[in-house]
Length: 347
Image 1 (cartoon, rainbow, N blue to C red):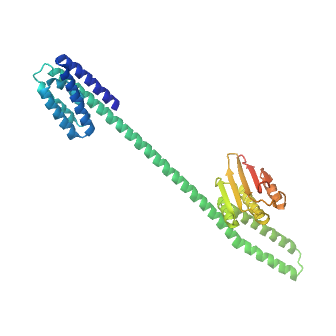
Image 2 (image 1 turned 45 degrees about the vertical axis):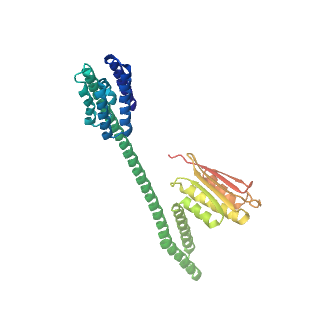
Image 3 (image 1 turned 180 degrees about the vertical axis):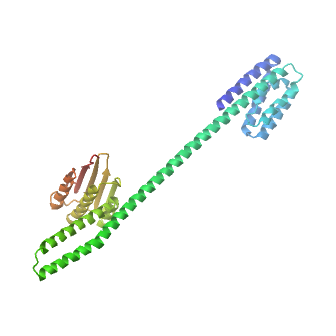
């Protein structure tokens, strides 16, 4: 919009110089009037206050008293202000040209400049309104999206925490009620068997023992499901007293089998390091990719006492193989366990 205003000012200046040369025989008077008009407009624009603009308009009116043809430069001095009464004051210098032959051309130029300025101000106002509305709409949409994301995150976290607490509560209730009752039954049947030889007691005791083991497994699995893998790994690092670097980037909804086996692998790795290595630092990287889960555990041991073979490592390899993954061990530059388990496709 500023470039259009500047272009119009140059156009009015050129028309004013041409009109002055038509009605004024002295060139220096035309040059002086043009310079005065441009200077007055520049000063009014510099101070950019309506009272200063009015003052320079009256100064220009006084100039027009001595140089009547200066009224032809009124369009140059036409204020860009949105206040209509300020622009109307630009017509005051025409009073000194009422009796002159160039009065009507000057009036026509001033009127046309007034209309152009009013049109430009109207377009600028509409453009400003549209931009303000667009900014407000974008800000409102951004705020709504932010609130929606915060609500979804809070809702997900609340649901996840409630699920963990409920699983832990169920595991505790099963252990406190059924676990103790079955243990008491096993002791009672053992006492009855020692006191008298009754057929069927062996089978009863075996069934009760099997039930007890099933309950223990169920409780164990529930506790694993009710445990956050990230929190468990952090606790494991803290309890080890080693300088641990944990890098965790996995979703909360991890399959229980992945969570359970990754935690067992980490426990076995820490146990081996603390028992067989002189390592002082451990690094754990648990990452989830679009098609697989990845676990890397390594230490900075230098004595080479940690072997890549053993019952514990064989159990780890077997567990990971059952998940359909691969497991690699390395004792170069410290002991390292690298596990990759592909994600199962949903039916």
